[in-house]
Length: 143
Image (cartoon, rainbow, N blue to C red; front, side, top):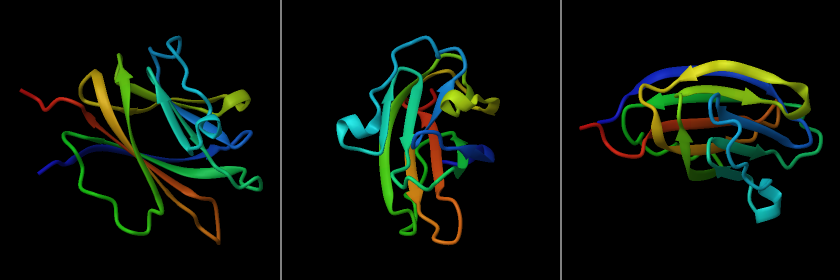
């Protein structure tokens, strides 16, 4: 059974409906299209994952990042939207970009570099900011 190795939770600024989760060495690679351009709320390419919050009144979101040693169990039903994407993590050092507002570096470290899967889940909170959960695990099981 897979287990969580590291976890970080922070409040992020949502600028123009967006924020990004990035590998710190991969920020010069291909950028994904904005999610609304593809009809979704999540998009990923290379080392960048965009999350788009549709509500125009949202200024912040609570982001929980988790590094797992294998595919994590499914999320409970309170997470209303879910997507799984592929990310290249050349350094394994994860940061958050808040578009023109800046961001935070070295928020989470995954135990291995390389190709990972990311399960992204969204939970709206009528009393506060939305919650976004990003679970990362190696695309290939450890040998």
